[in-house]
Length: 245
Image (cartoon, rainbow, N blue to C red):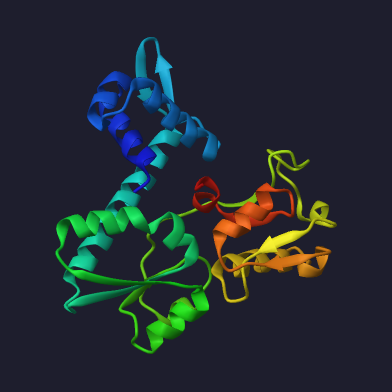
């Protein structure tokens, strides 16, 4: 689970930054920074001071239920991993998840279970084909898939964001789709959940990839982000992917 959620839930319990810092083994400024990061990411204030007393706002109460749900889902995933009967657990994950999200779950699982794991990191189309062919026990993926064909459980919600170079005119701004015209696009390959979500949103607003004069397809996020950071185009990814180095 995102460590900021753990810090937030601790602060909900203690309503004291110093006690929370001791509880989560961080400095008090680090706790403050994590809470501010959540408030900025979700565009809402979570706590208020009444005199010298810290209190949880109504928005904070709603976010607390969300964070508790995330914690429960992580525990459920770990339990589900532990209950699989095969000698080797065959797990699939999309590249967004495999590159930036899954490691914390695997660390928690492997600390509790002495079991072999086989992990395939691929795009959504390939993973679903492997699942249907019984080559994988289950997959962790993002985005759109035919839900009526599968048993599934929501693991977490993730913000989908645009990224560009730090000195790009779009940096730090919210840009409507029509103003993207003329920008070079760097995107994942067809079959990727990330690519599918972006194209669906373009279609919803009456556009397609022809909006962009040049489209570069890359199946790996590291070179994709490298090209973006060097000003060779813009891209659209999940927040957790954007946040990783």
